[in-house]
Amino acid sequence: MEECDVIIIGAGAAGLMCAIEAGKRGRKVWLVDHASKIAEKIRISGGGRCNFTNTGTGPDNFLSQNPHFCKSALTQFSQQDFVALVERYGIAYHEKALGQLFCDHKAQDIIDMLLAEAAAANVQLDMQTDILRIEKTDTGFSVETKAQSATAPVRTSCASLVIATGGLSIPKIGATKFGYDVARQFGLGIVETRAALVPLTFQAEILARCKSLAGVSVDAIVRCAKKGFSEAMLFTHRGLSGPSILQISSYWREGLAIEVDLAPQTNVAAHLLSAKAQGGKAAIETVLSDIIPKRLAADICQSEAVSGRLVEIANSAIEKIGAAVNHWQLKPAGSEGYRTAEVTLGGVDTAALSSKTMQAKNLPGLFFIGEVVDVTGHLGGYNFQWAWSSGFVAGQHA
Image (tube, rainbow, N blue to C red; front, side, top):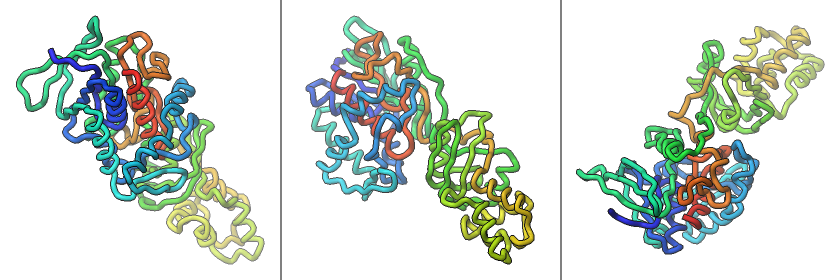
């Protein structure tokens, strides 16, 4: 049987960070992954430029059954700490809206940085390696693996086992339920999982409107379940997308309506009534298109069956148009699911883990980090920061 100090399963953002930190402590670390490409989620993120953290990261940017759980890790390794690492490697980056930090060049710069750090920490890395069996032993764990190019499996013992296998989002790049299965095997609870940061879909009538407006984008406020996000919203052939929709999808549940303000800067009814009072010779659709895109203005007027010159339209009908713009109520049928979801909500129950070490309370030596845990960030670099922070913390103890 082979031996090492730490086996980390999952060579994504969290797994790499954990391997680096454990390796720095002189631990003999083996990092394994079943995929052929390392850290593929980093590579494709942020349109290929990786939104690697957010300058405003704090506990309020995360969802979890225990909203306090993330505090310790985020304090032990903050966004400033990761930015310092990026700057040490001379990686050029820029800040977009709302504190989001992106690579100037490409996401591969972050992967190369992490691989260089891992190499310096003497981490052994093996991709295309399947995990066949995990067993508890007197001294830790026994992990049976098989390289996809090999004929025979290998058993390796370790004192610490770290599960960093992510969630169920984007299965085409290798997402599986492996991490949840390991948690269940060792008696840890799982908070129900669902697709998050995902476009929303609709029934026939709304879907037809979305299709006719596909490509139209507006700055909107989207609200649901006492939460609201003010960011861009995009009409698509499948429904609604864009940052504001992705954000609210983490809070939306089946049966709930969402409310969309398509013109947050304008009280549309008041604007239209004022234009009417000043003579109102223009068509309502024309005046409305000064506030929102022309195609959207036409769609709303048609949907509400209101047309003609403002001066000829009853105030009640004008107020109806105002409500359709500032308080559009609609009920999603569902989401696009894990296929396009950026992250998985839920996961390994934080009640089973130490927030200071990410170690299982009932089983010393077993750690869970990153997306597999019931900590889910908002859109904007927060999920990567959770990966860096939770990976760092586990790496100090594994």
